[in-house]
Length: 222
Ligand SMILES: Cc1cc2nc3c(=O)[nH]c(=O)nc-3n(C[C@H](O)[C@H](O)[C@H](O)COP(=O)(O)O)c2cc1C
Image (tube, rainbow, N blue to C red; front, side, top):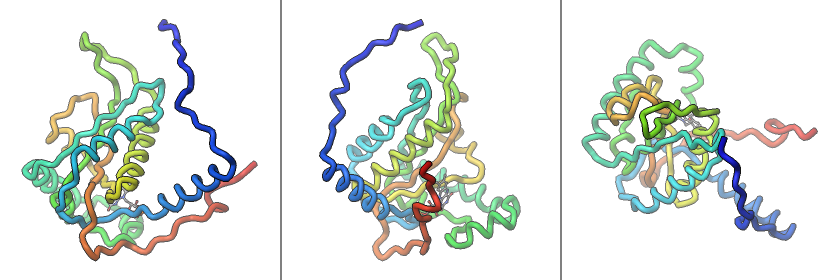
């Protein structure tokens, strides 16, 4: 057993009531402007901005603080081309057989299809991996807890950080993702969770007209 050590909570900052309300409302408004974009400009994004966003993601809480995530940041055009080729193969099979009618109907309002040009257009593809277990220095296995929940939270923070930095992101999940681990050479303890396509939107891009649920629909106060 390791004994817990404690430090003062120096990072906490209590705002006045007024400031609290203002901060909550302005963050809400800022986040409500976030949209998933499917057409990117090829303008480069500074790597240091991506690095900061990754560190924001990694500030997420995680089960037993195991931080069971790994981010592979792809900018090499040859690797992007390879990923696009494999993704489109999976997507072709999905749209031409694997997906049932209900799933295709749910996707129809987004106008998506099997072709994924954004996988080559965007400057960065951040492939988020979940680490099903950790690998100790001696090669032994370290148990991880609530892996999906933890990686989902980290990915949410990453999406927020990308938006906050003035870029757009598309969470992309090919219906079969095994090829990501294969192409990117990750260990058998890792599984691809999601690809976040990151960059600037192509000029004049349009996004699907969607509605977000209101507070009454999403929350119950007891
Ligand atoms: C887990 C997850 C997987 C997603 N997978 C895809 C995908 O494979 N392809 C795609 O075009 N959009 C994908 N999206 C984006 C959603 O379609 C999008 O978030 C949703 O339509 C709401 O639009 P908004 O992000 O602009 O608010 C995914 C989003 C999430 C959270």
